[in-house]
Length: 412
Image (cartoon, rainbow, N blue to C red; front, side, top):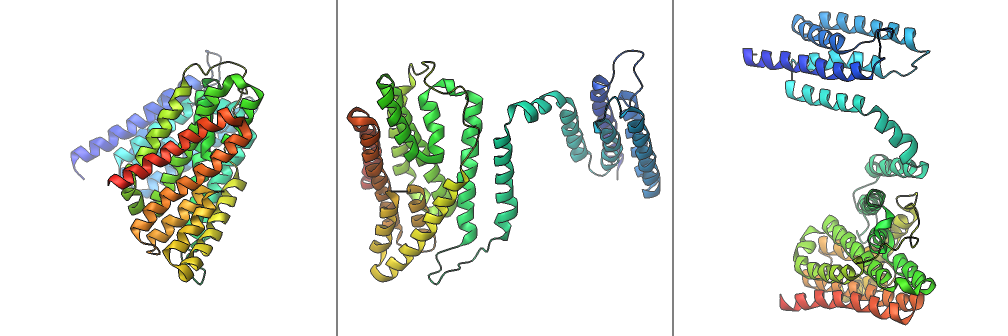
């Protein structure tokens, strides 16, 4: 190790000690009568001591860490009645360990030191976040999403488990995770912007969970409050824009090649829905038309599991119908499923296309057919939920997006 490497390690160790020390100094007790705590000088000296011990060998570093641990225990024993927290004692242990690690990898050690200092400095905001801002339901959802991704997913088999080789449990669960994660992102965004930004913004984020439910909900709002027709139509169309974004993400996750081949048709459909929804973005903050707070839950696990179940059933049905009737049978089964759940149908077509179960051209037109089937079912729902004025406007936007996608397909 050259002089430059040695110097980088020493400087990184000293910087870590000073950075953590200054944060602890500012957060410690104030005033001349306050008890002495480990602050700027203590952490800086400890960092240099750890750097020296690391150079002397493992025995010297072990002795230093044992001594620091004893000091941390003594410090906690002396102050636990006034301050039962362990943050200061853990920082006292972390500083020499990072300083020692800096002799091997100064850049990574310095980065970890910065992260540690940020966490120590953000004591009050983090406490407020955990105790006041995040609700119990949101914590439950975060833990549920983490368990689904880190516990359940690795346990599922990644090979077909059915006679037609259509069902891969890990692939199905990845789609469940995608729906849950998008719901979480939408919920966080809604918390950040606030529901008072208007019905269209709320509608867009609601579409990640269920655009069908959004169309029905905003239609019911129009029946109760006819004056919100324009923003409610915008909200319904933007919820379908969010649904189309999620559909594109599902296609990309299951069959990236199919998504690339549909890039321009799907872009046209996105633009039409975006333009139609944009008309309702003006003058939508009416006050009193929305609840004061967004929903406490970030997503609905039941909805994601239902989607996965529908995907599994449609995959099996499509594989069987393809074996009996060919590509037309598989696409017919998926199109019928799209009347109720377009994401499940899209995942079915994408997986069949990725596995070579249907020809690429048939898969491309199959996706457009799914959009048409979904537009048909949601148009009927819009008329039933919100009446003729709401229904005509929503149906016009939905079918315009389908026509745009089909028109681009014909021109390619």
